[in-house]
Length: 316
Image (cartoon, rainbow, N blue to C red):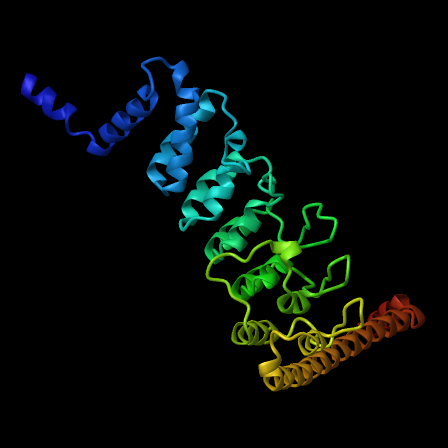
């Protein structure tokens, strides 16, 4: 009888025991008392779990801290007071971001460097993290976060020549030709400029040279969502800015060809869209006029039901 009882007891899934043991370890770490769970060492443990991308440990620790009234979004790290979401945004595992987002009332919070988690992901060139953040409707791809220069995340990505991230952000925006407030520079202008006032020092492995700029411009212009002939406050196109500087002069002919081709393709696309719009408008007008005529005829020509009933009676 005892043997049967033991077998029945130990037939439960073994994973349940591992979860229980792990839970006990986290509760008991730093001290045997429950109060110590909310102490600084445990918060530091969570910061390290996020940095080391330990998904399981993050998953277990988050609810423990929440139970004890700890606001996850208040946990900060480093000189610039990065939140856990900022740290995860710079990492390589979008799953960590997925776990953290429900614990943040404001996923657009700023660190001491005035950067949101989205900007941290952009600066780190983490396209998958950008996508993960933008899945959450509270994360805004087009908000300038109160920046007085009207700098949007897409401007930031363009300044770093991160074309794939520009395309991800563009998919969330109706108009990607929005310009900065101070000098009306678009993403095309910002790709040419130094932009140290926007992005500070360039991150490692980011270099602005003729080849990198050509690849960026080609990829962005291929979207055909921004007019390459747009001018900034000084009346300059991005090509004018290239000609004016010394950085890209060695490849000026290639940039000129790229510009000319992009202008022609954009004109064709605009003409095609205008034609489609006119066809739709004409079709809508035809349908509306047809309906109006039908209604008017129905009102003008009365149906004499009494005459029809008399004729039927005579036939009978």
